[in-house]
Length: 78
Image 1 (tube, rainbow, N blue to C red):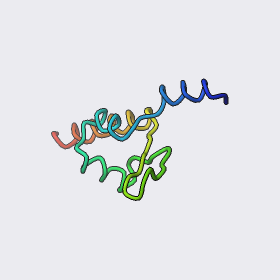
Image 2 (image 1 turned 90 degrees about the vertical axis):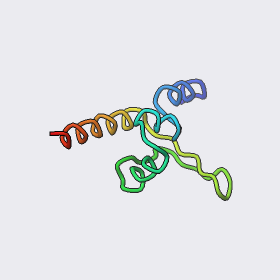
Image 3 (image 1 turned 30 degrees about the horizontal axis):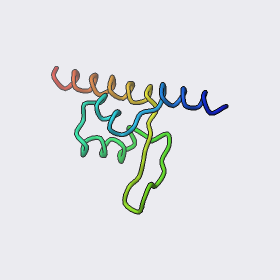
Image 4 (image 1 turned 60 degrees about the vertical axis):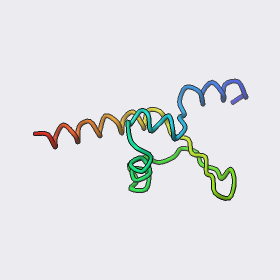
């Protein structure tokens, strides 16, 4: 894959943690718990510094998880 195609793919299919949190409408703590419990898995992860890790998530997986969360919430209301 050439550089331009890679950038286009990334822009279309990958999300930062912040963007993924906005889609799921979760707080930082709740999103971290979703990752820790295995509901969401980073597609790409690398350590930017000793304390900072950059994680990218697949958009379709985040959107599917949001739909699943909506189903769980609807079931709890019944």
